[in-house]
Image 1 (cartoon, helix red, strand yellow):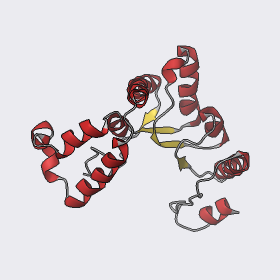
Image 2 (cartoon, helix red, strand yellow; image 1 turned 90 degrees about the vertical axis):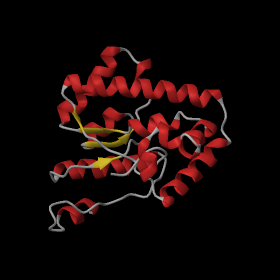
Image 3 (tube, helix red, strand yellow; image 1 turned 45 degrees about the vertical axis):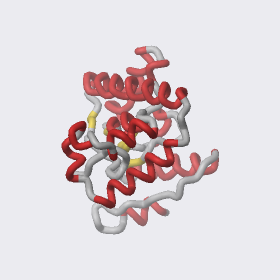
Length: 193
């Protein structure tokens, strides 16, 4: 019914239907049903990565993976990685990585604070001079939240995820996956514009 409402809205499917974030098997079954109905209606579905295997989401009808930070695929064999990437090609799906955000997540609270708010901030990144007071305040809140997590594990996991993500994008491009540029504007060190 929800897919019919969107499809029949007369706006070419441009309306966005958003599900409240839920967890559990019931949510996943409902999501897959929506994806299958959207595919049947000829609609593209852009969504964030859910807590389900990517191949399952793509085969169910998800056509665009947005703001994606894949789990480190570097732990998988190259054949397994390629089979996942080929699902994008086979299904005409698009991938929107979020490399800048994944890179910024690797900064500790102290290093992020120095890069953004320190006396050398503009020398380190000339775009900093154009960041609005609102954006800097939003970044400050995110940096302060992160400052309490000083674990070396988070940094190591962030480094692994970023290295894996950049390798994913390179290999996906080689295999013909459609890659879209995207941002999570407002996230630490993501400059609008």
